[in-house]
Image (cartoon, rainbow, N blue to C red; front, top):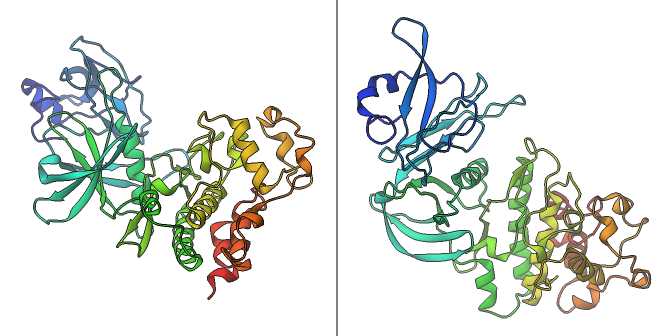
Length: 418
């Protein structure tokens, strides 16, 4: 907790009580007003006590054990009880207090502790804008003390739709779990803006996205693509070994370091943990890079959704164009048609599970088209891609996920053994 307990979160007149506060139970997320806690009284018993929440803040759940105070709350007093299991802790980031949060994310299944370093925006000097979109903005900044250049991601927030800081904290958790993976951007902690209560995610500054890199030059030669695919598959293999699935791999979420020497994954905002995620996993990501099983509603996919996306990235590096360009309206049936026309139409022989997938009924029979075979080799002729390279591409773009290459299996193929 902040040493300035009476400044913002708790009133000064109850500062001593706030310091000795022991949260015993809370019932629902308190969105505004006051929160009722139980604390240990000086007489050894428990007495209810009310602490006023600053009108500019509210409690919002971030993890099973981590809470934070986002803005946009009226001053109307409400009382809510939030129930937490006895093995969970509750913490808050106060507007004027850098802190290290230890989120002991203990569940019935159990999980390791994880710490979040929080610094203030005053510790950095903004030097530019790296990118932006519907999600928010990524700024380039320099640390005032170390001089290190970093990238800081802030989510877009409006009066009517404030940013949900839980998204940043989820991404921070996954980036922290990827520590030591040289092909994932390094994570430096959270950045807190006291003026707005916004949270930013500080990461290693790498360079432009692969999307930008490819747009500025002709299609890449096979030798360069082989080197890049080895890096990306190695990075994916290390993520998958830790039970993390990225779920949104695309050129825009891959960064290019050193003018083309190394590629690194970024933006784990849609990532999931196979150890804790409950089925159904859901349909997320970017349509032209989604695998067929995700589009068709498979509830329990695995890391091979990432290897399909890597196959799309590999094809894009070789041609300079998207492998399965969407038609602009995120129509699942149209997207499947684009996919199957290029890799071949699956049936009960090549993909036995197809008919049992939740959304398989939306796929027309396409009876005549089922006779059409894959046109991949015609697109990637031998002058563009060797037989060994084509073996990798074809294995990554296998519709049946049970037959699709994993990252580890792809790395064992002859293309990467030279």
